[in-house]
Amino acid sequence: MLEKGRQSGSHLLSGAVLDPSGLDELLPDWKTRGAPVETPVQDDRIYYLTERSQLRLPFTPAPLRNRGNYVISLNQFGCWLSDQAEAEGIDICTESAGTEVLYEGNRVVGVRTGDWGLDAQGERKGTFEPGVDIKAAVTILADGARGNLTKTLIRKVGLEGPTPQAFAIGIKELWEIPPDRVESGTVVHTLGYPLRSEEFGGGFIYGMPEGRLAVGFVVGLDYRDPLFDPHMAFQRFKQHPVVSAVLRSGQMTRYGAKAIPEGGWRALPRCHVDGALIVGDAAGFLNSLRLKGIHLAMKSGICAADTAFEAVREGDVSAAKLARFQRRVNAGSVRRELFPVRNVHQAFRAGFFAGAVCAGLVPLTGGWWPRGLLSSETGHERMVRLDRYYRAGRPDPEGASNAATVDGTVTFDRLTNVNRSGTRHEEDQPVHLLVEGTDVCRTRCREEYGNPCVRFCPANVYEMMSDGDGSGAGHRLHITASNCVHCRTCDIMDPYQIINWVPPEGGGGPAYEGM
Image 1 (cartoon, rainbow, N blue to C red):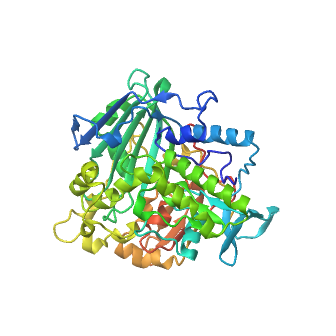
Image 2: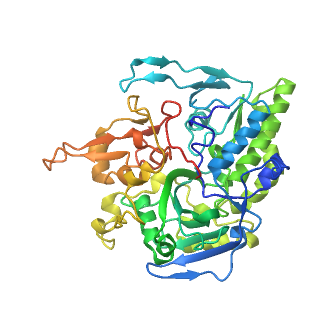
Image 3: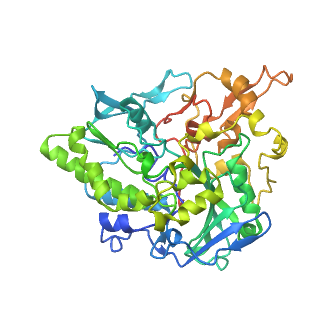
């Protein structure tokens, strides 16, 4: 197994509330093995927020009922799982980023890892070590939402699903608060403020033992306002009275962000090709209505393992043989869970009311929704040009960027947050955020969209620098790649699709300890 982080779990980030059904299938004796799954959900609350007040829903819809689930640290859970794998003889190669899929004809035969020891100009330093080709009878890609390997495989072989994948960005902080303020096992989800009806998402607060608190915000990466700022929306969420009262006199200790695949069943690609399978977030196995994907990633991994084992044993790793993976998925609990909610995220693109109705009617309709009311655009295609979005009837652009006061106690700027993410990259290495033609950034993108990369990136990686003469001719894109938390939002939401996220030197990136 190749792990691009410094250790197993370094780059794992989620809310996280675990549905243990996948773990039950994988390791039925997980409790006696000492799995770090110790905080059962005790209380569910859902609030609809306005700017200054809140309305608690009198009941919790079935998809959001979490009794029987657990609040966990996904980072710690991933570390524990790696220990279980290594105990079974699995080799886990940390600090090994897969940079290229290897083919023989159209058959996948393995991956190539990245070079070590290149300087910023791509020249070899004294520490240079070339990447290696790692070949396998069956390669299983689990490189996360918008994974660089999966992305290239889908495009090369034409594996796209019936509808484009939809993504969201999840931003999360860990806090330490007085231990009697929020009971361990409390799960709070919010709707409404600070999002407008045209934007999809909401906030969460998860109580953990010893006064630790997970606070986060999820925003669909299909918003229309080019000046919308997910990070600032998160700060405004924390300023709401119901949230700020919880955080008062507490301390923020950790920060992270990642992309979330929310397109659902109809956005799943074909996950089997000659010599390879795609699982987990890389494929999009996530239930956006339940806000859960860990158990589905595990179940898809189990299906892939069983399929690969049979194929290798029978000496046939063709796509036809590996199609057993899809049959397993269709016959099991994965399809039973995902198919009824296949249209929910897309329905929310028509507004909060339409999405809520679609979600609420799932038990009656089985997930059906009029096809004409479903958007089939990719997220970046929904972003509207400045001159069109802010024409007559829209607010003044200067007041529409979701500005929030940064006080350093409840709200923070991006650089402060990045410092709490444990992010570390070798400074003298090639930039891993590849932009094809930066002239677009200082001309068309600046004029048409106002350079949204400086807002949708939650880590202050992108800045537009000016020579100060006011002409605009001196504006240029500056990339601080060492800030990157590997969320891949830029690869997803760039309106021109000229940003290509690739892995940096192995081991670089965040260290989501306890997240």
